[in-house]
Image (tube, rainbow, N blue to C red; front, side, top):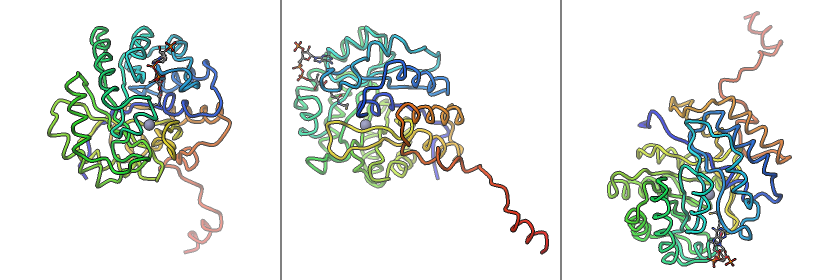
Length: 315
Ligand code: COA
Ligand code: ZN
């Protein structure tokens, strides 16, 4: 299997995950989780989003979180923004990178950000100007890239056209998001095989949700296409409040375990990452969807039962 030697993981749990939690998570606990993740060596963190506080009340403390986070050199602290107002707030809060959001399907874009795709693109042009002036990179995520919960299939021509517009307005990276876990590995490969050669120089990120248990298979398909940037969420938190049926992202510790087992480097300290996931479980007061936190890594060994040992000795 041809996979990259190293991949860069962007942790999105404190944004994609915390945004859909039923209860508001206190600011100090959000900050604590971000710090635990950076101390585990996570190279990129999408800390929060600068959106309308009425749309996503769970992240209404975005400024306070950004201000309190302990900045570790080597970690890039990003935030999600839908428009110019969000970008200005993010820059004022000192983000290292701006992640934008637009959907590949009109109905999801209106549900999510109350704009048509065309209106979103106009706003993102302003976002690009704000990002350039502040000298922070802009990465544009495309929701419903592999299918929309309202409209179904998203034509590849339309997706390609949207990528072209985002690259034109200054996107350094493009994130293809499978918002409600509709993608399959063959589809991921065919989309990437079509898009990657057409936009040389673009940094591609795959953003997966494990809604239908296909996140890691989809990631493996993307790795084989040469994608080296992956979004993931601690504990497998995550989901879009404006997409019916959305559930958690691929679980960071499960993904890191899988990558390390295959010899793919991430720069992340696995044990510290698992400890961070345990702390998130404690904060939320419930078990999370991740598997590794329950099963332990594949290197885990159990003592041989006495009866088995006796039988082995006798033989
Ligand atoms: N942050 C804070 N306030 C914002 C804002 C932002 N990023 N963008 C707009 N506003 C304010 C405006 O200043 C205006 O305030 P006023 O009424 O006091 O003048 C008000 O919101 C309405 O502005 P408008 O541009 O008409 O926004 P809207 O009501 O159509 O909402 C979004 C558009 C994008 C701001 C809103 O839908 C949103 O925040 N969506 C979040 C989507 C999301 O996070 N989804 C999950 C992640 S994918
Ligand atoms: Zn998502």
